[in-house]
Amino acid sequence: MVIKIDRVREYEALVEIYENEGLDTSLFGDKIAAIIISGDRIIGLNNIQGVEIRGKEIENGVSADIRIADNLKLPLPIHLCTGFLKSEGYQRVVFSIDVGKNSKVKFLSHCIFPHARDFVHEAYAKIRVRENASVTYEDEHIHGEGVRMKSRTEVEIERKGRYTGKFSLIKYRAKELRLEMEARLADYAVAELSSKIKSVKDDSVEIKEVAYLNGAHSRANLKSTAIAFDNSRVNIINEAYGLGDYAKGHVECHEIVKGNADVQTVPLLRVRNDRAELTHEASIGRINETQLLQLMAKGMSEEEAAELIIKGLLRE
Image (tube, rainbow, N blue to C red; front, side):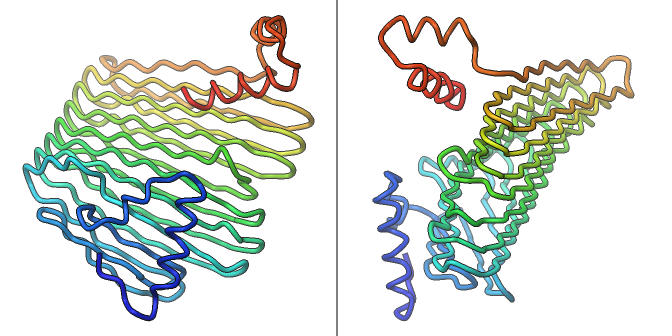
């Protein structure tokens, strides 16, 4: 890992946060391809054979081009760490990712904003999955009380490519979150998009997941899970477009509401090919009463039983 001398303290502060949060600090090791960002500065960068990361410091943030060679089966994940250690400010991060043919890689993205009270984070990622490549992208967040976040990811999946995108914000406040994930699939391509959110107090959350099943025999599964407490608001839109011959798409939304929370889910399925098939399922409501009573019968309080059910739902 190449670390600039004047940025060692920021690097060490991020590593300490990982330790405190129980995250894997080995991700900062020399065997891991990685870019480490703090505010508008690149504080660490590591390339390995087959993975080239080119970072550039831009106004209020960082952009990075990431290129994965053809036929690369990477045993360890690629680490994308985006941090902001101040309480106030604005950050913009742009990733362009190109994964070569027949390659298999996993990205672990961590967004670390533990002290944020009045902070805006904007992220844009464009990902290209070449023919027969497989990509997993996991995005986990650590937020302070005052994060306003807007994130958009666009994925192009070529023939027989596979993409799995996972977004998770379940331990910390969402405050204001606008999340968009969009996938365009060629012949025999597969996409799985999932998001898990817990909103509290007066949080405002909007999630939009979209799959364009352009290719023949393409497959997509969109899954959203939200737990809304207090006076929070959650709006989820899942769109699937069946365009290719024998394309199949499934949309799944599950929301639990407690207190005065306001939750809306909108599945939009559109077929323009009579050989395509799209399905959906959705549920909004309070915690399952039968499960609650069964756990209480084993000695749990109502609050403990409810918390266990919620944790189980978010882990699925």
